[in-house]
Image (cartoon, rainbow, N blue to C red):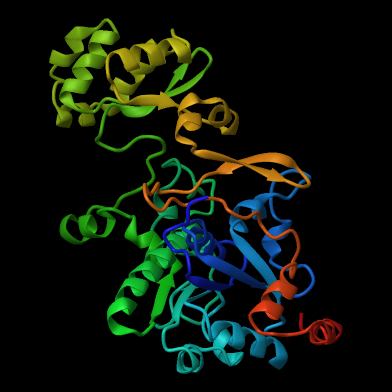
Length: 395
């Protein structure tokens, strides 16, 4: 298997649940050597998360990592972490600000011993400011960053997207910061701290929400499935399911009207311009829905593809597993799991032509499964010392 773009980069992950582990997963997918430090015993709580009797979420976020255990609340556990970080390139942590400082693992201590160390810190509110010490999960960051206020139907309370998007965004921006810091280190020879806040990561993708209010006094609200003022762009009912159509450009709408057998709509004063269609969005959607209800999803898709209109099915997991484009692009990877057999999960993105990312290693089967390899190989601890650390509850 070809080496990844980050081959030779050593990452230590001191993260739990989603944001920090997702950041480290992205680095591991790109070829970094990732060692995850878990608390002795149950390890990362994410090992117990998932839907159904088999908890397999960790198989995604734990891939391309090895696991060691260390109780970071104990001086001996802190010493193990410090020694590992002396030869590391990146530390990823997502504890509440001040936590690693209390453990003697703050940036000043770590970078004194290893000036090249890059420290990615992911937290709810960032490392500074009046809210820094508050506890914060992804949903709280989504609320403060503006996401929750605009998701859902206008006459209902704010809704959740369906995935932990705040955590994943923070992990993505943390990874982006780590890559930028690696580049900067080539010139300066020094590492730096990457301060990533959940709410600021969400804020980054809020488009014109703030500036629209600041300049125009416009308050964006919940609009359900539509993009207000942009029509037609919605999910429409078919005889056997739903189908997404995005034909909001003038030429696109003219082609849609032709396919509908109603070419006169393109010249109708209510629909012939972008602004007019936006003003009559509801009635236009009702008109299109009346037509799509007469067709199956397959029939509608055939017509949309033939007319080169942006449109697509509403995919569920089963659709993804059966789709030829997913297969051709290898959007889903198949990994052989000793317990579950072949399992499928999302593959690595983006695709690099010369140094491809890949799933090179399954998620560690148990916390500390790599203790002997990492503590023995990197730190030179022998079997007797490892046994003593186990008996004292450090690992």
